[in-house]
Amino acid sequence: MKPAPFDYFAPTSVDEVRDLLAQYGDDAKILAGGQSLVPVMALRLAQPSVVIDINHVHELDYIRADAHGLAIGAITRHRAVERSTLVREKAPLLSAGVEWIGHPQIRNRATVGGSLAHADPAAELPALAAALEATFTVTHASGTKRTLKADDFFVSYLTTALAADDLLSDIYFPALPAGAGWSFVEVARRHGDFALVGVAAIVGLDGAGNCSDVRVALFGVAPTAVRSPRAEQALLGQQPGEQAIAAAAAEVAGDIEPPADVHASSAYRIYVATNLVRRALTEAAQRAQ
Amino acid sequence: MASKKQMIELTVNGVHREGLAEPRRTLADFLRDDLGLTGTHLGCEHGVCGACTVLVNGEAVRSCLMFAVQANEQEVTTIEGLAAGGKLHPVQAAFWECHGMQCGFCTPGFVMSVYAFLKENPDPREEEIRPALSGNLCRCTGYQNIVDAVRLASEKMQAAASEPVLVTEQAV
Picture 1 (cartoon, rainbow over the protein chains, first blue to last red):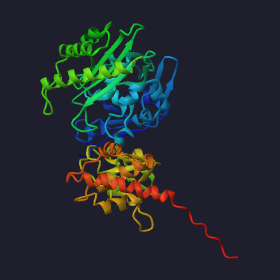
Picture 2 (cartoon, chains in turn red, brown; picture 1 turned 120 degrees about the vertical axis):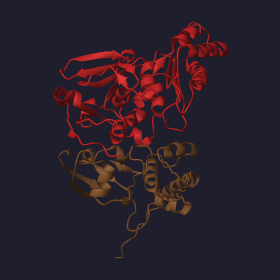
Picture 3 (spheres, rainbow over the protein chains, first blue to last red; picture 1 turned 135 degrees about the horizontal axis):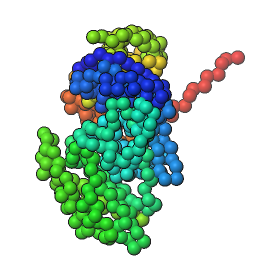
Picture 4 (cartoon, one colour; picture 1 turned 90 degrees about the vertical axis):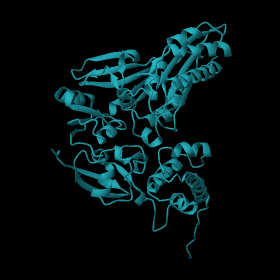
């Protein structure tokens, strides 16, 4: 349970991180909050020869609002997001979802960028990013930046579009349209555990009270966080009544083939997902104006 | 292959401490093996059990998931830092009185988590206490008494905070 030896660097700027990535690339791992990386190093599932600790890169520690949403720096800790009145006001779904991540001791260290770059399919943040249609700014060692959507960023189980010499630097969460309702629900074996299944949902209504914006993001049911296009399409244009929501929730089964593991069978996950989507859409519709 | 040791200087329980350690040395191992502060316990060593919880700059963290080099120039509080003048801290006293432990191995981690929690939320409801304890495992499953201890600690600390300060006039 002791990590293998490594060389340690603690850069203080993105430019220094870029230089280190250019030099060490494949051999290096970026250390952010360390709540996922350090366990896998302790278990020797990862043995990077170089660790680039970005905790002193203060330029990546921010929560900023503009007219359209929130920009969050990669090294911003979950606890800062949880406590932020700005996030509560501009992105209440994000506030609510972050409280489900791990435990207080984990959230005090864990970072938004680290969690997204780790891309655990049963983690909350990737699903929140998918529901809110977040965009990811990636800084390459060469200094070029590119912007990716959640769909393009998450590739598979614990795999993202990040190359070995890339740094995830900023995540932009667009604000919800005015009046849109939201919900975050999760079933885990214990509070703070990774989810068996979780759902982030958004419902927007038009003037006639019909659903004009429906987003259903699920986690714990696929190699990445996923949206359910069938459920979303089924409710779009409908009044969000009990039957319409139940019908939409039933569509989720057609979009997912959840893995079976020691905690739950695939069929059970579909059963839980269907129920959670129903609950989430109901709550989101109630919150919508 | 061992990587080069680095000098680590930090404040632990208000005292300046330093030591040489490889970057892979966790803060937990550094506290225990290099500084001799064995009150911090190690259960799982991969961030699950919470036995190694300490405060870094006032925030509860798992010291097995931080490298000692990352605590360089930071302020760390361990279980050894809570009792003052030979008197148990109210959180410790409450664990004692409620018997918020069975074998006691997890207790330092619980006490540090509860200490940080009550600082932020001095008068918690039970629905808030349970999630606040979720990051610490008690394998004896003595949770009921631990929840009771948190409630008692909260009462003790609030009573202490509202006690009138005695003003003694100096005799002329």
